[in-house]
Length: 130
Image (cartoon, rainbow, N blue to C red; front, side, top):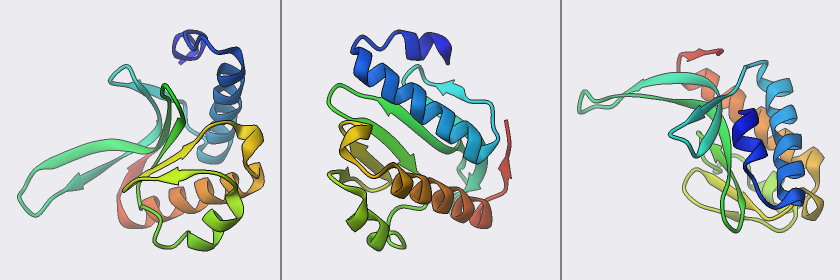
């Protein structure tokens, strides 16, 4: 993870990602793992689809992308609309929250989103702490 963070060229983005790493470590109490060389994940869970396909994924994670810091929020955002309104400038995908800089958002709201995501993921899937 240190190599991943130190490879981020933009110093402001790197500082943001270091702060995100500290936040996610504190909330999950997990040692992060770099998944597929592009995402830092915390904890993991197992899921079996109706098709019988098994999946292992991180409980929550983030990645420094070209334009955004991406947060991978497993349960999606249907239960988080109120929090998202208070977060500040962001975009969402199916299970991804995109922000440009931590200074653009309310970090206390981000923390609430992360806590809720971890709690919901643990409720629906058997999670392991790494």
